[in-house]
Picture: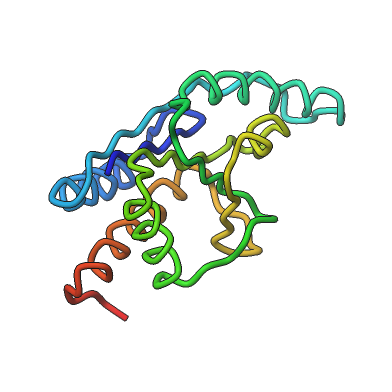
Length: 159
């Protein structure tokens, strides 16, 4: 399976880079992984509703430009469906079984995802009702994808 993680912003924190690199290395035994970072839109700290929509729209256009037309798109969104690790494993297993060899997970910037990206998504996934830094979500998502492969292969994982 080819899995892309399309995300807004460059990762700067060394400790997150190390964790992400570790999970990318572990996942290489199971899938072809790719992290695609699109630039975030520079904006002042205080934004009007219109300005927030414009920022999300510009970031969304960059994201949509990186999504493979054949990909099954899973957008990470607070309003998405929450799944257990086993349910995520089942989702990835079913996608592979039914010929969806390209999966793109999308992580928005600090303001979230544009409506256009959410419309393109085949499903929306929520990790929590809490808000997490989008950079940290890369690491959390990679860990869960790794866990999903371990579950699907009947390999041990921490419960």
